[in-house]
Image (cartoon, rainbow, N blue to C red):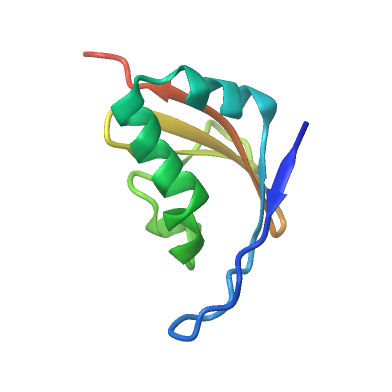
Length: 100
């Protein structure tokens, strides 16, 4: 099951240029989060992310290994993984950062 959402054009910024999809495992991860964290993740992923003009703007945005399509970024105490293929961004997983 994939949910696709495209943003609307905003007057102050250029149109969002990515097609966004959510993998089922990502949606299940979000559902399992504690309520405060779930609210924060949902706010960012389903709303604030559409204000992003470049993926490199995301906090601690990094490529995973030598892969050209898999990336991750951090959101508070959570790691969010992405698959980026052309103009399609797919949210894959969200997990709590390990305590070091």
